[in-house]
Length: 69
Image 1 (tube, rainbow, N blue to C red):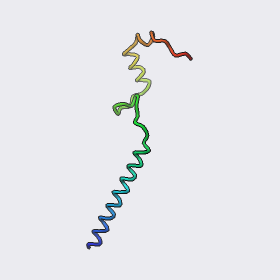
Image 2: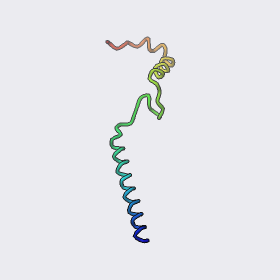
Image 3: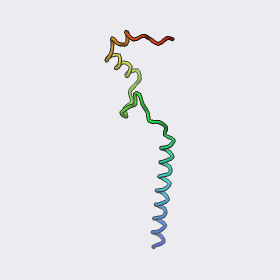
């Protein structure tokens, strides 16, 4: 019975170590945090985002010089 409990405990420790290794590897490969329209954890459609900005500042968009093409 003691051997059975030791095997169960050993398996639990091995499972936990593997889980930590996989999680840390996943975190390292995740890349930089997202930015822009994905801030605050909410994704915003870029077209809708441009529409919101245009509604907030309708005059300023026409006064700014455009980028040379």
